[in-house]
Image 1 (cartoon, rainbow, N blue to C red):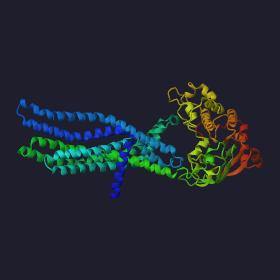
Image 2 (image 1 turned 135 degrees about the horizontal axis):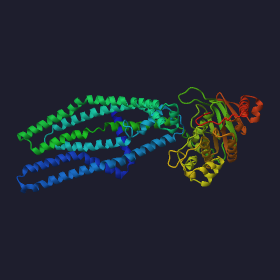
Image 3 (image 1 turned 60 degrees about the vertical axis):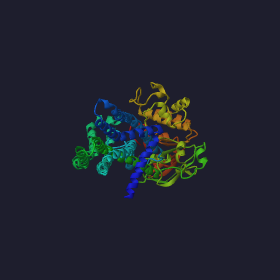
Image 4 (image 1 turned 180 degrees about the horizontal axis):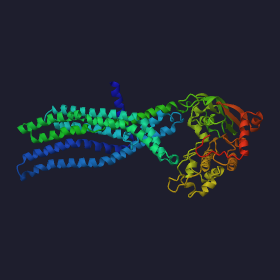
Length: 618
């Protein structure tokens, strides 16, 4: 029991801490409005009782002067009540913007600061992110601001409750415990239902995630092509609605059950009020109690249920669950963190030359799987060399570069840069490496932003932009854009255009080259020219080789005619390096690489075009 109380107190304190994001002036205004609003019922009862009392005392128009004071008080109470009511929503709206904005910023920073992506890919993390996000468009969820304001209203209601109790005691003490107990009992019923309601809503989060995925597929232009060509649009809508119903129907069922149980909850309100009202009316009829006191008791008694009967329980429970999800997500991501375990040697971070990277007995299996993609792999990436990694589909080439980029940790072994483990270098390592992934992202941003994201935050030099565009073969594309570098690369944006697969790949290459210009010393290119024809690829690759002459380059390509230019080629098979050497050395060896190269050369002689089409992965 003590543990439950302690947890509830901690949750309420956490909600009140959310007000730190509002600022002192706004917080004081919101508190003032809430307190005034809670006191209005007691003040109204007092003013009306005083007015009735003065009316009873008067016996003609000459006595109208005695009404000025109670009328003035009544008018002031009305003005204060209306002013508080009018100011409440604008102030609450601004409070919600600041509190929820700060919360979502914390959530975004937590997600983007996670050094690895292993935990983020799991269903647990995705469910926690959705719950912590607390989408205001989803009526089953509540934001931290909802809970903070509800908690403030609850505290303010304590002041209003005390005021109403003072008014009641003018008649007798016994209505106070009777009505307060019944009001708290009514609130208990509301809270219990809200708790059951929210728990049921939480059980539907998995269904909601599936529904979101189908909604995104229906509304996305890329999936929209398949939906129209294959004609599964109606089927996709049915799948979305199936998950939507699975999310909400159990919650609707609880709502129907709540309506069926209204009778006993209504009796909790009606019976105590009926007893008090009957006793007070009888006293007034017999002349034992004045009409003024009776009026005050009638108004104050009902105000208790108004104060404690507000349905704030859902806001409190939902907002507490939202904050708890954020804390749980923080703990989950911290378990997978790559923050530095110790101070890394400055030379390992600040040196201007490419580092020596060594994979030592590295093994890796993706989270929640057992298959070893890499199994005891040993590899060196030497300073300034062009290293090519080749292998069959599924050999683990892309996995290797994800480990090199620090997106995952090895499940066994170590990866070191100049003798320091990447886990010890932490985020500093990301400033040293630039990667063009095979499934590169197409940002719906202006062309300039698509490139400068390679090193955000730095001052943009137009000369550097133009230089990396030339090196990536993008300059002709930029020249044809309606607004040049400021053209949005999406037809859904005003004045925007879309690019071909090959042009988007050149944008991704320019982004990586921009990072090199800003200090990166290792570049990883995963199928960097796969969407280009052979002629364009040769031209772009010559530009890349010239631009990256003092940088370590790791190249992955399905075109062995490209990798033959590498200083060293390694063949990845069964999770390990099975062959290593120059193109000539590997051809003389006559192993798997030589057979692959000969087979591909024969296909080229037959006129086969092996460009990767859009959406195809190697």
